[in-house]
Length: 162
Image (cartoon, rainbow, N blue to C red; front, top):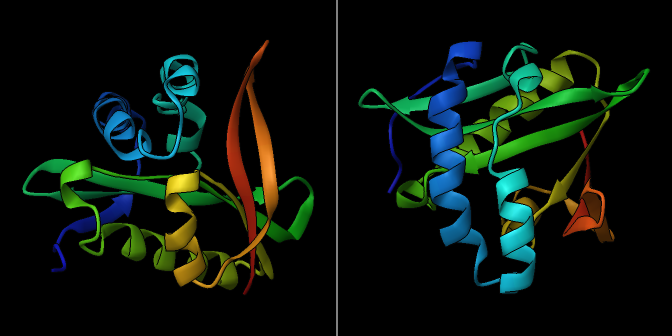
């Protein structure tokens, strides 16, 4: 079942709503794929919206009935205009598998392609790997994302050519 919502560029004033979405959804969605020891250390760090990302112009949110139910986008990778990264895609746990993440990702890929990006990468949670594979990404291998001194988050680096 697809949910209809409004996809729009994120704004700095979306910070509180996105923080709430991440804090509510990540514990529910990730718990089957990560041990409690990882969750207790990583969740306070990953379940926070990034103000610079909200203001970058390539990060979007989905609103449904006045409520934020999804977010995600992309940013260029360093100084290489042909490479970019998918950034912080998240969906309200009550709207998973209803087309929200797919709509966000398709928009991001289209926008990046139009900007001249040829290669898109992402660091997917273990939970999201099947979704990214279904969207044409392939695994490059496990990575440990440093979040804070002594705190790393296991993820899977993935890539897709545009």
